[in-house]
Image (tube, rainbow, N blue to C red):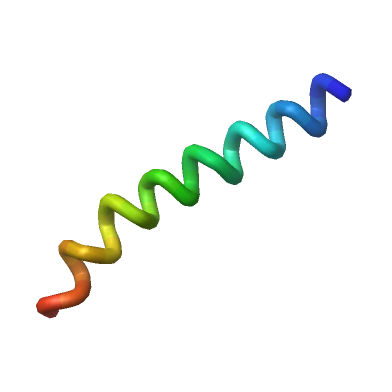
Length: 28
């Protein structure tokens, strides 16, 4: 269960980072 929570946390963090970075990469 702990491992699954860690994977979900990394996935959520990655999704947040992607949502922050994609708008910056859009104009480029």
